[in-house]
Length: 296
Image (tube, rainbow, N blue to C red; front, side, top):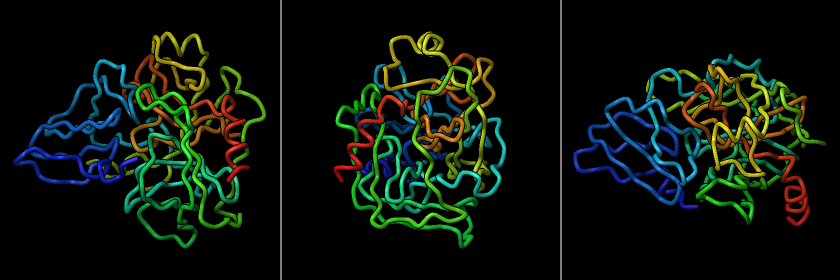
């Protein structure tokens, strides 16, 4: 991981330097592009096309663009979560929220490998991300472990484990989410939560947002993304669109029947028709999760 590259894309002459982040975009004077492997940043004064990717996009796509549309850089079509109803929700933070995650044990957080930086804090117990509420736990990190088969070109095995420097004592605001005992059934209604990218112009997702989306069959998922879906990926969303995760929600949880079934990974646009979001399929990676935690 190269965190400075995530924070500081090289702006063209005349551009106004602004911290952007992996999926965020703020208005600047110049239109430019910076790419490192799969990771790209776009900065523009114009609204970019609707056919855009959230989170990260697999390198084999024909284009990688992000859009800045005021007011939608958060959970789409959702609602404010009841405070602390998602006590496993994590904010990965470097002075601002850039990715989500899930507490799965008293010293372990699960997130997306494409969220990996060199330096960050883990924040637990938060609801209003802009205000100190005396419920938060700010945790330093001991170890970050990416899946050895993680492919930053295709986003296969898009998963990482974060070991906290100290064990967390569960309370009313912080509690691990159970890992799955089986893969989710097609049609199961699951909860996605996150703050989105609070840096984007016009976004007001200061409080944790939730939305319910159904698990989509592998066949429908493959039809939506031909040749791009691997055995460690699954889809969730509505065929008509309208409800979805969004930029800045990457790495966050997909919880079905009280179990963590997915990690927000990538998708086509935001809440687009016939393009559900793609999640890392946790039930296919349980052995790696458990063996990695045991070895560390």
